[in-house]
Image (cartoon, one colour):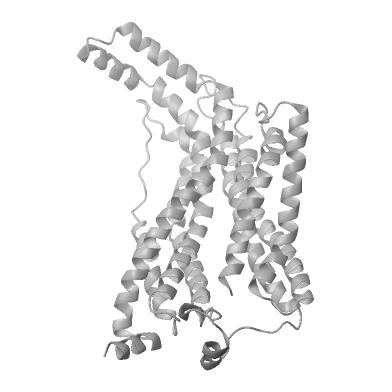
Length: 412
């Protein structure tokens, strides 16, 4: 497994998501919910944007397998197919998170859109709430499976074609060290660039830790789904919500995430460099470990976002809010009772605005994945660097690799 194959899949997935974003917003989203308007009203510019998006998405999705196989140096159709399939899985994950998961949330949200927030519908009826929760939490799993299968198949076909065309190419990997020194004018850190053991360990550890952390949070997330279904019965007379979070199990997933570097450094038997291989592999593992958690957590965030106007309605219309505003008026002479009443009326009108509610949810589900991508990319990189440096210093003291023994001899 090569890092170039993984990076090709990531960039192809991001570019394909950007290309598919406008068709999703302008064609599919308005079909799911009445009232969602396409971003461009002009027919001319709308058609031009669709053609450009379709062309870009088509080129990316049909060529990423070939690019991955070529960048990975595949010399046969089997190797090329494997590289294309690996890149396809990454493309499918990114495309699901950025485009398909928000669309799935919109189709689920359509179940409660007809019930306008107000005195008549302080909450959607029980049947609609159950359908909304079921579609929001369980339908994305099927979408994810189909997306991964389709993208892996397309990538495997493209990679196999590229590998077949490159069949018989001279392998430029795993040459003896004396030949690398005499025949290749490489810098010292390029001598072992064909050794991909660290990448394999990073992928395996990242997937194992991510899936383990995801299953650790199942009790918390299932409790949240029960909370959504029984939400009307949990509202107290003062407008507050009767909800007691489950026992804190988040410590175990966090501890598991923080141990990624230890597993990576321990299982890399023969790193090519003392620091660089271990730190880069740890960063990759932390990025991979967070993906399964994000896939599950995002749908629960969408679930609560859809119910947010109903919960805000109860908070604003509860007797406690009026009392709080009255106390604020009495304690602050600069605020008059009329201004307080005007503020309360404005909040109530804001919450019961059906068009605003739909626009807020439709915008939030497409913006949130990109915000989370940037935030988690920065955070996981910092965490990976810290873990990589710490465990690359600690673990070789107890379990030195050949490069550590060579470094000790060099110091002597």
